[in-house]
Figure: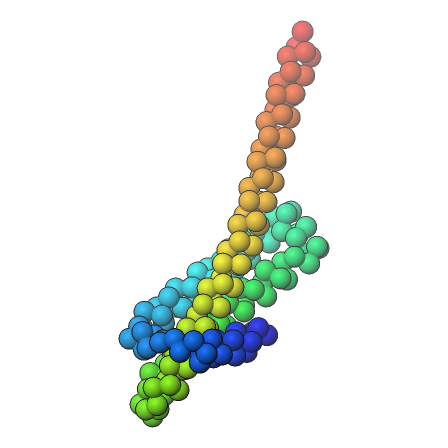
Length: 165
């Protein structure tokens, strides 16, 4: 959430300097809320999946290297952004759109809302990339274990045949 204020300020500057129209956000609140809800659900599922992998040797290596801390931090950040976005959108629907009649201010509110969901999508993509690296590492580790077990089985068969002679 450290970068969120900078993203919001940047969005406000861009919106005011270029006179961009963000009114489409007002027509799509519930679509954006649905996207944020799905992303939060995906991240909660990924977090649960990560907890299931903790017994894996590769995960212990990632943990010792302090890499999982970054992954967990990004996951929690993205979940928090999604929840914050949903709350902000609901406040926007219930309060801001009812009270604020100035189109310039509402355009700025819509720009901020859009910036939050775009930033959330960005962080979610980083999390998906992190999870991809972890899953690929686990896959490679499991594949190596299977190959080692297969090699051991072949050697056992050869030794058994040799002993039987």
